[in-house]
Length: 374
Length: 159
Image (cartoon, rainbow over all chains, first blue to last red; front, top):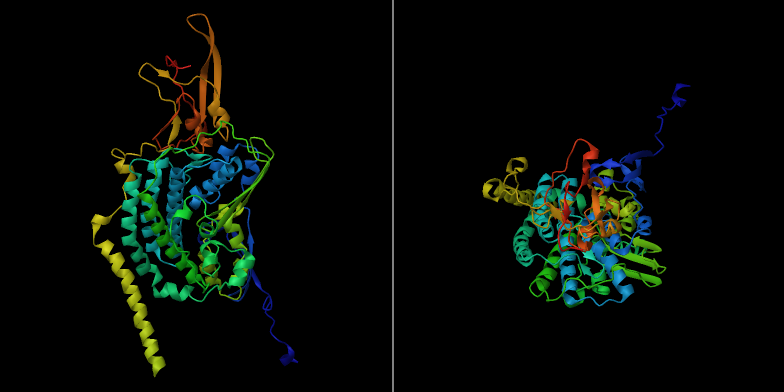
């Protein structure tokens, strides 16, 4: 009689469902992941978004085009300058304005500085996620130099609102070129330290290598762009394929890896910092003379129609789609933000890995939550 | 045998990679000249912000308590989130003409996003940014500021 009774543990055959977030240090914002676990193994990750939804696209419908610029800052706050640029380029494309070379070059330099500071913060916070406190301090120390450059020219540090339809808000500060050159000189010296501290570190490499593999086919079908997609071999750099601003006059390599694991997503960002420095070095010495803004009408009205602009932010491809009905504010504006699309692949690449790897994989996608929710 | 060699090689390579990182951090540890942090509340006196720093929107007045604002309301129209409110009044000038002038230029710091559209679009350059950045107050109503000083007048020669 007794040997027939088996010990029944309640929940033994079921999966654990736990919440990660919305306030979790490694999600860098208010992202809630509902993780289904079997023991320690991740079976399903379901992102719940919308905690920081502000309705930016809807707000844009009630304000004028120059006013939209400051809202785009608040989408992906780490590539604020590039977000500004995307709306400006769409508006300029609609109005068929010829933008002088000076504006194009300065915009490109700002975009690349933005990209470097964004990747520096990625390196800093990713290092901290992986347990290296030093990275955070070193990363922010170097990022501060770029923020000082921004602050001197634009008056803002992160949300700079520097571009406006037709050009730039102000001319560059007289110290700008010298400061940028100093920064490049400094950062070329410091970047090997990044490699010594984190890239070669045995703990870091064994936690990231061979984890969260994303194949080229999946990267394309999920639409993963930016360094995350390029680590899988997906050649998706808008700067290369559809050059805007001054990217057609500079030489740079598109950083491509074929491995597609977490470590190479990290490595792609480190290499992109080097490429960004190359781009800035080519442009900084020959900023053409000219006006810093084209004279626009006080009230900008786009002709009726649909306008589309692609730019490459530090996280991937940002598409701006404007529908105008001829009024001073857009009929509809749609942003295809890179983080929202990159988040979609998280469930696919974390499946069957351990829960500790989930932090590493989600961190390597470099998600910015306001960009997802916008 | 080769697997044992591989095992020990990996251990030594791991330790070497850690030492390489430690060399960088200890290099900074023993060179206090490279410290970049500032002791903020203590260095208030000699802390200089950049001249373009967007602290808050102010209306500069000259020594005769005169400003340049004509009360046209362009800043109010251009502000994306209703930060600025211009309340104008009608005054009678010396030669008997009726003229519009500002009564109050209300600036709500708590709503400002520092997009700089008001400063940039002002036709008479009446607005500017101050470098003040310590905005913390105990009461939210203190964030509603009146930019024009009491008794101030329009600067001569500005229409």
